[in-house]
Length: 317
Image 1 (cartoon, helix red, strand yellow):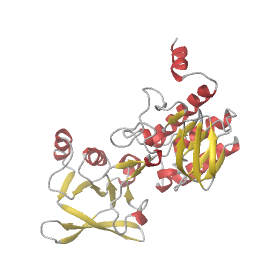
Image 2 (tube, rainbow, N blue to C red; image 1 turned 120 degrees about the horizontal axis):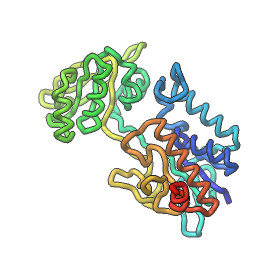
Image 3 (cartoon, one colour; image 1 turned 60 degrees about the vertical axis):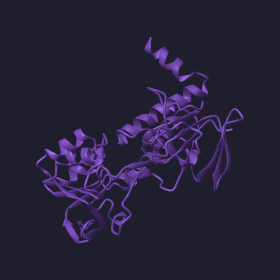
Image 4 (tube, rainbow, N blue to C red; image 1 turned 45 degrees about the vertical axis):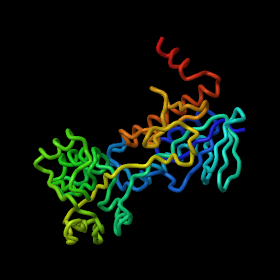
């Protein structure tokens, strides 16, 4: 019987693994399809504390993994296919690993950005294509960029990008935006934002130096054209990686795991959640790492027989 298992190896899962390993909890960390999570697709990270000149996403995740391994965390590759909590402990069925029994578990499987699935998109992620304006906007100072999307997130990111870019072009496949009225007003009033509505993106154009343009088709006239740009930000939403839970853990309407206020506790005793899988607001490496720390500390108390509420009450006195 294991003390704890961590699902996922993004900044949340790896931070949890570091804390758990240092506490002699001997965590088993299960990697999924994308070890290191979305951050491995980010070429340069300049807003993670401690790195004066920045660091690549893959290097940061590799360093965090090695740090967890140094303290005794064990990494295994597999995919969870079933979770059974009916026996008083957690029983995992893991493809490639078989059955794992554990007293506790941290779910840190993240969320995947929705992509357009058009030619040139995936191969140019990190070369001008991004899914995070707050992560990569700084690199497009005084450049022309495109934001694809029509919801609140797209409008928020468009406004944010105007702090750096010389021009921001919103491309949306409908004539009307889905964003709330106030978000539309803010974007419409921003002189740096222009509009290409009723346009469907069909291909990301690039050369050896990166993105050069976005090919779109007019939905009314079927006319094709290329919008010249230095960067393309995809803002059409995220999908939390929770389908494998099969409804065991409570989630909201979008599929994000619900946790008790101020904690990482789920509705199932012994199961905790951290990182983007339970956060659809911030989605930053540093906030994910923070909740990873929280989850690890709460798992320690759970194994010791101390409830999170009792622990929080003690600390508040």
